[in-house]
Image 1 (cartoon, one colour):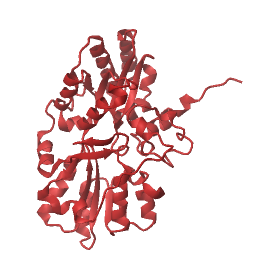
Image 2: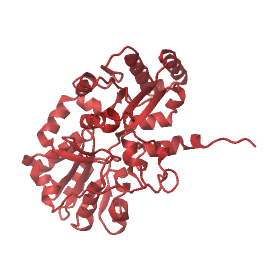
Image 3: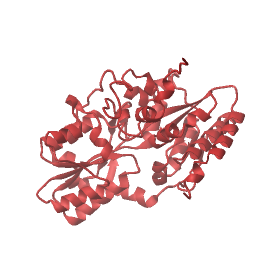
Image 4: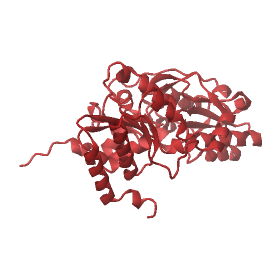
Length: 378
């Protein structure tokens, strides 16, 4: 398959592994892949098995389903069960655990009108088809999924729809990276050593590589933006190793076939027209992060579900036995959690990292958990 198989070539992967092994020094290297898509690729293709033992990959909080706090899911459930709204959202979101042992999926079983959609435009179409229903799109995701939400809000306004609104939970990547770099585990205690980042792919097609230059300059952390294929990731690791060895901290772009320095200006302008920054937003695992999320501008207030319905956000603590928060900060690894693979599985997720295929726990459960089992010969 052209343009895919080329980035999964086993012989090239071995060459890249040999180059990485040849260039690493007698020190440790710790790199965080921020994006859940990279976490999935690393686990699926066994990239860590091809790396020297002194190169460690740390999973970051780059899965939008994983970082969605319980309180926001509770608001969506409230819309469906208490306000009678038809709630539309993406498939993985319906399985995220919420308060009172609920999830959107379980709320649907209790009679809530909850629909899974493939895109924001599907939710808008549903509102047009059923003017007697209040249709709410539960919008989550990073900068990648924000422009389509902006489009449907503008379309709803142009159509004069009175029965469509959006529960906006869009979050921003650079703010989360800042939060990680300012966290006590990184700055004060050093329990999460970070030598650099693999920058997200899809997000960077929208915002470009320019926003990461701040981290390279202010925190002296190299960033290499990479595509989602295994050779993309390995090439990015090689580029990070070289930067560390040469004491450089720059933004480099491995994903040049899709990412530019300025990104998609049309999409950025569209988002700026419809959304503005929230003062703060709670991320699962990171807590309250200033200016890390978007809300709908006053000009489009008629389509803001938080204004149309009497909703109040309430912060809810995670399950005490669940280590998702620590996994999302890179403090713990999936297999460090006592619930992993026992009571918490993709079929019965206790924590959000087990819900999405891009979650660190789900990725390790699917592709790596048997490596944890010691082989005993008889």
